[in-house]
Image 1 (cartoon, rainbow, N blue to C red):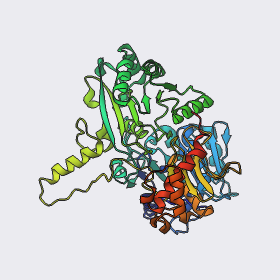
Image 2 (cartoon, rainbow, N blue to C red):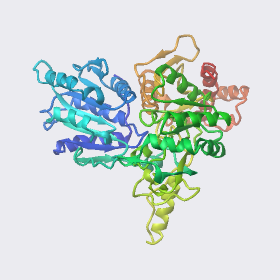
Image 3 (cartoon, rainbow, N blue to C red):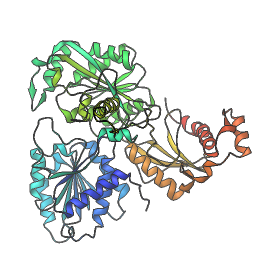
Length: 551
């Protein structure tokens, strides 16, 4: 079976969890930023759990429950698990009318499973003797786990081991999670991910709404009430300065607007469209087919901006998005992290992300800002600074007080490379198709049937055969790239697709140079064989793929 190659920190996270369980920590948690591949981590962990041989873990059943609180997260987890697990391990869904509770691994909607009837049925089944028992519960986005619905499920399985996975171990309503999770056994920060080129750097600009007095907006559970905030924004016609700020700072960049209500999302979209910035609206009421069409328009550039009523904060992957407009001012650190995290993923040509923070009169000191991506690490982000630049400056200022002290943080490159963490020679066409050239075959990523997800496909470079989807479909971009690399290695001589392959270091052949000159590729005689092969791949790959890209 094809094996995905884990990043070093993903391997370390899995090892830390198994070590914690072996040492008696029953409910460990790991914290990894958006874009770090949290679902890849727990999918690989489930595979190892199923074949574990540690004496300390043998007492637990082999079946697994994975809890997610949104439909998109349920479907994404199922896609990744089916890609990772052997075919004889069944993966089932428990959501709405689907009730596959006999599966080896069950991905469950919290809202569905916490209903008393569903939960009783699963517990009754688990108490039988004709199948293995549930031994592990994994909670995705585990900062939600203090809610009564989660606790009801946990209490029904008091003897199992647990794992919590999240991008931020905090709740907006300030409810403590110490009673839910025993310890955070592994974490990586946003700045660490930036320093290793897994995330892009980010800067912020303020959009001041002097007509909105935040002190007059009602709060509930530690944050502004969405309805009252929406009313205040509409009364002040906040959509006008928001659209003006987008034109001023991000006129030619693709972005996502986060608003508190459908009305504010529609008003902002209307103002942006009037200003010539093509914008579409997505809300909880948008039908799935319509959402898929809108997302495809966003991906291909027919739509520049998505204005949404808080439905794109989790389980949404659009790495080409560069701008996050926080038109839903918030006092919640986890909500702010989730919104900004949508634009931190690398993408070819993306040098840094931009956040437009909407603030009103008074109480603005309570609003979350870029420093909340690294609480307690960065004290201030000055005007014109990115988050990484602020960290570098503060560290330099601190170290200047202690002669001979070296700085620990360095952002290696300002232009973050989507492929920096990969050893494979990925190519990107002008219209954004990602592929690896494997001699007479292409392994490439193509939009999945579900918005924001990707399928790993392969095709004959001469176009003699229909395109074929692999077994690895419905994945976020990072997972799809990892599986694409695995497919290229397993089926198409992956040794030759690596950036470090020995053949790339030599001089190009005369035939290569002659072909490049005919194609008017400049500087062919000064390139290595690998560099020229990459240039030729881009030329032919663009012709092969881009004519099939709509828009």
